[in-house]
Image (tube, rainbow, N blue to C red; front, side, top):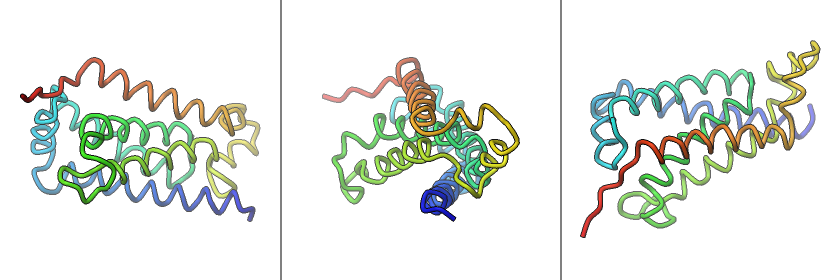
Length: 174
């Protein structure tokens, strides 16, 4: 196994576990979807319930794709989109460190950059992406390196940007 394959499977596992836990928490823990929707509304993302459902489905949906290494740059784009929205709508204003009041952006930025790195790296040798590439899938071969990074950045960043422009109305204080 090459070093890239080891790095890819570790990054895929870390992101898959993290995103699944986030989605599961939104759906089934604490205030569930209704509570997550109210929280989205409180930070200016409207309609909160719709976005809570979409974020939860994205988090739960990308987890198995990442775990299997299937369409890895697109799965990483889902992670990127969710995290960029969280970064801008909530965490950026609170400073870098996560232990700051309101939770800083340290954690969210780390996941964002990890998603970008994984988009560029691809699924690696132990992935369905590799299996598809070995069986003449032009898409799997095409989604590698700079193109994988570009797909991740454009799809994830573009989706986040579109959501923020159309649905985020931050509460103005003072």
